[in-house]
Length: 113
Length: 112
Image 1 (tube, helix red, strand yellow):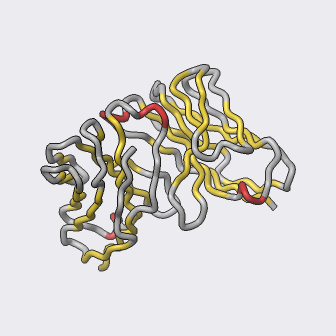
Image 2: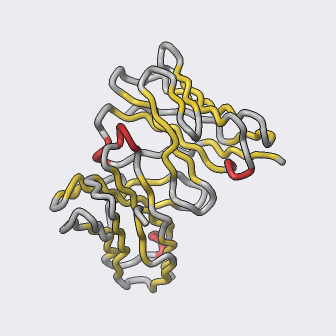
């Protein structure tokens, strides 16, 4: 099925551990981005990419790394997890936002203890 | 991107039209109005967008005032499944590469 796939759906980490949140899309979209959503809040942009090999920081990039080696994949790495990174993470992709908008994944619920 | 203002919550009876307002008084001439919604615990979903003309698709209608300082999203026959947080976002034309800026949106509750 075409869309944005995020794995895992749930994850519990201990403080200081590292992990990678996976995001893959099969729609040949150039634009991809990562967001976090804290309880009762809107989504905040972490990192984004305008194509393979090109990434940039969003509003809240500290503590996260990204890379874009292929058009399909845009993984988000937590370098040393902290309780403040407990959140729901969403990945999104777009071919042309002015025509089609962004397609979002179903999210990864991360708890750091 | 221009700032938007939305009411924090609204109620609507099932089967009636839901009208969600958005104020964007500082909008520039090349900025589009986008609407997304987020049903509980799911990723946001694109609904509709427009520049200055009214737009309609299978999900909703978007009415933009002539001075473009405000807009209204209309769900013509609301169902319980339309209960969600609705986000109004203003963005420059062709500015889709660098992600989206979300506010707190309007929590629409459809009452049976």
